[in-house]
Amino acid sequence: MGKRKVTILCSGFGLGFYIPGLLAASAFKKRDIATEVLVFESYLEQDKRDHIADSRKAYHNNFALANFSARMPMDIRSSLDDAQVELLLEAWKAEERYEFISLSGHWGYILDLYREKMLPNPIHVDLLYVDSDLAPSWKSLKKFHPRYDEHYYNACLYDTDKMAIRYEIPVLSGTPIPFESRKRRLVVHGGGWGMGTYQSKVPELASHNYGLDIVAYDWKEAKPDPDHRYWMNDPDWCSWVKSGSGLHEFPPYIEVAGEDTKSYAAKADHHWLFDVASEAMAIVAKPGAGTLIDSLASETPLILLEPFGSHELSNLELWESLGFGIRYEKWREMDFSVDVLKEMHQAIRNRPGERTNYVDYYCSRVALMMR
Image (cartoon, rainbow, N blue to C red; front, side, top):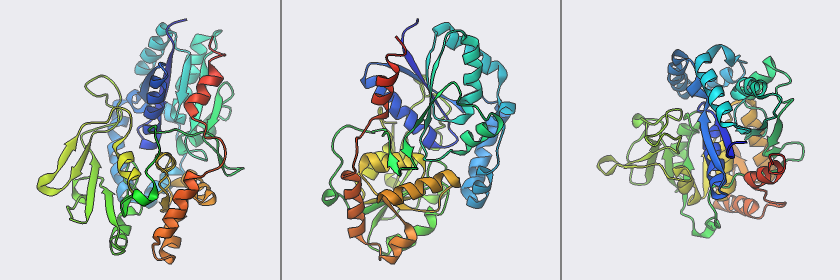
């Protein structure tokens, strides 16, 4: 067997299927286990890849269209660049890759091809679900390939039957900032694609004496303001384009402040937005997978905006049930109370049960199998 390496399979369709993969890779690195992060869009035909930017813009401008598209199953096989996929499979085989973690259902067909190529030797695949219900890529896979998980391990971060957290993906070691030491600020964003109703909440939130950290989708949305800060991922960055070091990395970012605008390089082991969220009293956002991870790891409660798709509705109901989040409308009825935010912060901090790190769980479960 070749040198052990865990291959982490992400997607750039949403940063919730990208950032958690990089966080897991960072955790493996701390345990001296080699990883490679790959992004699904790299293996699409060029014209399909080019079309993603159009979809992103359309979904940003029209949330109803985004939600409609989330309900439409798609057989991704017709979009694959078969020559690129075959080169990838041959490279894996030459290296004797046996361990995989997939955060997106789109990788299912590629993993099946590799499993067949490696028979009779088994491969180990964790299907890592970072939402509390199946996201569109998994639903599409299940529609066209109902027994997609027959040979693989379903690793679910959340248990919706018990309304509980099974495993966590920590971001940084150390104790999160206590509520009393936080600034009277809120982080406002629309996820990796800038989707949803977040922009419409800014004037009302600003009128209730909160400083805002607003994540802009593009330069037009960033309006320098003495009371608020505007941030954005570097618009030239693309999740499926490797950096100059030949790796997929966390996004570089920009603080937009008129003449004082500053650009920052990507952080080595976590995403920049986590640092901003860690100092805030709450995150105002739709309940995407990455936002749940940020909320839990920073002990920052969520003000829940309209979800994207049924999987995010399930996320919303989970966070609400656990007392880690509150719907925006309900918080408005409570006059945007700071005390409510403090109660939710304490609920996250004092959450019951084991705090099982997913990577630790993976290592203890898979180590014996891979000997």
